[in-house]
Image 1 (cartoon, rainbow, N blue to C red):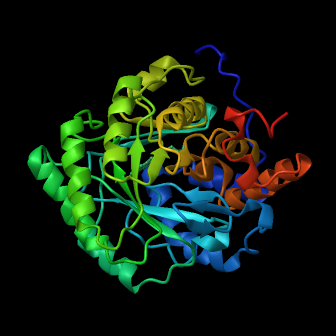
Image 2 (cartoon, helix red, strand yellow):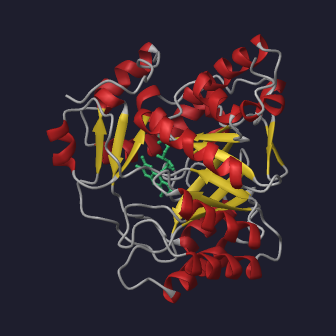
Length: 371
Ligand SMILES: Cc1cc2nc3c(=O)[nH]c(=O)nc-3n(C[C@H](O)[C@H](O)[C@H](O)COP(=O)(O)O)c2cc1C
């Protein structure tokens, strides 16, 4: 067993019904459980009591109004099947994808693992999906029950790299650029690909220049970064992002690090490579928000993501400069009404301090509102 030096909070309070359902889902292979969850989501949405609403939760991201700051992170609805029902779970927005220009099956199975003691998962799915044109067609015909962003990644094939990689990203962008999207995210930080996270600022420059050339409607473009990036790499990426009018950052992706876990180290080692998400990621993701907040341009926005399981977690990210947050692994451990619970807890915390999301935003950097 590794040391418990992380100061993480104990398990979230999970409603009885989901605790029962979770015990059944956790008997299943994690990827099959996920497929079932996506299939059942429309039914669960129809049965839900509706979202928690409070005007103090309103926020804006790239000038778009969101009723609340809790969004669905990329990876859960890779193929854009749930945009018409996600608001029923209490989400304020959702990020679809990652989509890739070519449809690929991803890495060999098994490739998704639960670390129950840590309320974490390790995944190396490797960007499996239907392909950008199929997802774009699906989204064109779908109703959006909430603001939707689409996350684009490079097709995960060994031959798609360098200039071909840039062309591949641009092909995906062309497929979705006329959809009524709130934002587009360029994923420069997937650890589960042949190339790993993007390290080359020249390639990034070409990609950003190309996207903005095609971006006639001026869709807000975000860049998704890795918590494992050095300060030097972040500076290079933020420089490029400023140069090409990038509207903000999604901070961030999963980590390849394995420090501070409660799960036995031989179990962790036997799982092998992949990106770690969930509770152990929170501090790394929050540090990434702090690091980027210091070097970004004032008008650029941040969407915080990583280990957010409660209203207090969301409060921390917003206080440190995130206009909104996204969740994925929290849903696996906390169930489908987690967005509502996070929003309810966040509204309570805000009211206790006479704040709103808008007045809390970035206040930890000035220490004003938190005193
Ligand atoms: C199974 C799984 C698949 C994911 N797929 C993607 C993806 O396709 N694109 C992406 O940008 N992030 C992907 N992510 C990363 C999440 O969007 C998010 O950045 C990360 O999981 C941290 O948030 P969390 O701790 O709330 O899960 C995936 C995460 C998981 C767990």
